[in-house]
Each structure stands twice: as C-alpha cells, then as structure tokens.
Image (cartoon, rainbow, N blue to C red):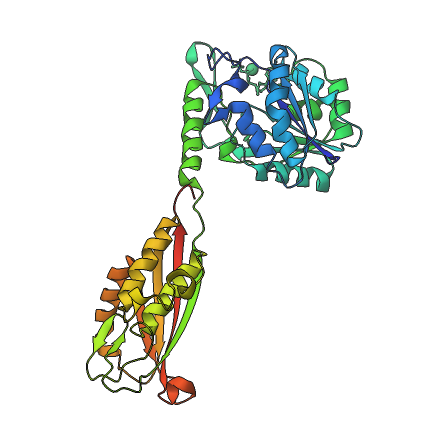
Length: 397
Ligand code: CTP
Ligand code: MG
C-alpha cells in the first residue's frame, strides 16, 4: 500500500430522487457493476494511485467497504468509506474530515459522473499542482441561453461566450479546500463556488463529454449504451505484425517443376526442398505465424512431416490460416517480395495474388525484384522471399 499525496473524494450519498430508482443513485446497476463501481474503476486507472474516499449513505458503508476494499487493494490504493450528510456539501465535508496528513491535493468527484475518463483526473491533478489553486473541468455552452420570467415569458438572451458548464472532478490544494469549507456560508452546488466564496482563484480546464452527470432516466440509458459500446470492442485491439523470410535453391534436376507464389511455372528448373520449395508461400506462412505469436513454419508443421513431402505452398497457407484463426486472430493482409532472376513474375503477378489470397483468406500482394547480380539470388543459385503480415485479435481475445 503506497502513501498517496492525491486524494479523490467520491460523493455517492445522494438518493437520486430525479432518477427515481429504488436504489440510491450510486448503487444503481450500470453495465456489469453499479454507477459507483464504474466511477471507481476509472479513478483507479489514474496515473498516480490516489487515496480514495467514498462517501455513501449510512446504511451502505459496510457494503461499500466489502465491495471496494479488494478493488482498491488490487492497485494499492488506500481506501476510506464514510457515511454522507443531508446535502452534497455536507457529504464533501465528511470526506475532507478523514483525509490523511500526507495528502496535499484533493479532487472532489460526483459518483453520478461514472464515465469520466481517468485522464481527466490526471489533468486536474497536474493543473492544481502547477497553478496552486482550484481547477474545474468545463465545457462550452452550445445552446443559446435565455433568461425566462414568470409565465414562461422570455426576458432576454444571455451572452453565452462567457458561460461554461462545469463538471467534476474539481481539484484543489488541500489547505485551500479545507479553509473554504470551514468558511462556507449557506448551500453551494459545487466545490468551486465554495472555494470562490473563500477568495480562492479557480480556473477551468477543458472538460470531457463523457463526464456527464446521470440525473434522469435518459442519462442512465445513455451511460448504459456507452458502457456497452466500450465492452463490445469500443477499444479497437491493435493489429499485430509479423515478418517471414525463406530461401530455396534451384534444383540440380532440370525436370523439377517450378512452383512459386502458388503457381506452377512452365519449363522446369524448379526449386529444391522437402515440400514444393515455394519460398513465397513459406515466407508468408512464417509472417502470419509470427504475427500471431505462433512461432515459425518449422515448429508448427514439422519440415520432415511425410504428409507434407512435395506439398503445394497453398496447403501450408491454408493450414497457417486455420492455426491463426484458432488462436483467436483474423488475418488482415500479407505482402511478399520475391528476390530472384527467374521466373519472371510480372506477367502472372495478378494470378499469383489471386491464388495466394484465396488460400490465406486475406489479401496478399506479390512483388518481384532481382538483387542486381549480387548474392545467391543474383548469381542464380536460388530464390528468396520476404513477407510481412498483419493479424487482428478477435473481440474478447
Ligand atoms: N450527494 C451526496 N450527498 C448528498 C447529496 C448528493 O453525496 N446528500 C452526491 C450524489 O450522490 C451525487 C453527487 O452528490 O454523486 C451529485 O448530486 P446529484 O446528482 O444531485 O445526486 P442526488 O442528490 O443523489 O440526486 P437528486 O438530486 O436527483 O436526488
Ligand atoms: Mg441532488
């Protein structure tokens, strides 16, 4: 357990009258957890692990300790759970009262903003530290705002260029927040207004649309949709890349058929090898296996497997595709470059791409080059192939 200098007080003691759910708002189900557990997950994703203070209804203190103790332990976050007051302001005050000595920066956050990203907490902490006063995340007001009098009569339009909609977490140097709460008179709806009343400067930093507050049932439906999106591959898994190289010598026997890039090339003088010597197909196989973390062609197929003696390159490609898919990946594409003096690829490149793509179940690009009369390929001793492939982890992998 580390000693944190940052604390996040999560106020979760409201009853959620406007949401109208039988559970107190923070304990209403959301995704696989609750509104509060979703907020806590985000907070525990902060760069600097904070001291976490949960302020919950009095009859939920034991339950919250049991649920969130192990969760906080897992990342080494110290945890306090206390019961709240009759107003938000009272609840925050009760959270402030249990802050340990070491804490110098305090963020106050509404549990009712469960989808606030961890990054916003990090940004508020950084801004409090660099500016030494209050920081609130805020969004521009996009609607035209009217002042309205009795009977619903529009009085005038408010200049929206100076208006901001503020969110939480709101951050403060610890002693500033403590002093502001001691001096607070009357009820305030947020901590920034309590700080401002105590003469503490408060700046805005850019807020985040995901930090919206769950207030009425349609907000909960929106949060539910966002959680679902996030779980269902909202975070796109990164593709994985692999490389493969293969070299085969021209056979001494002029009658050996030339098989390369999935095609048979007339005229014999083919490549030697346990299989058909199709260096291009084998390089692609190595690239896709490597991308999926499945080793190489020798390890996966057994180069001396009698069943593969003389096997066509496309058989290897079909098998590799099967292995990679069973390991939970989809092949994105592959590209192979063949280095050698013959056969001349250009006239049949499209044909080769079609055959290889069909075997791999993904687009394969084929290119050819020579090595300027240098090396084993330049001297006409054999053919080399270099391939790159991308595989994409399937959802849930
Ligand atoms: N809050 C609190 N203690 C209170 C009142 C509110 O900790 N006595 C918390 C809420 O749990 C919420 C946050 O303050 O996370 C913002 O308040 P709000 O959205 O108004 O929540 P509720 O007061 O629960 O909802 P309502 O006003 O609809 O009853
Ligand atoms: Mg309220």
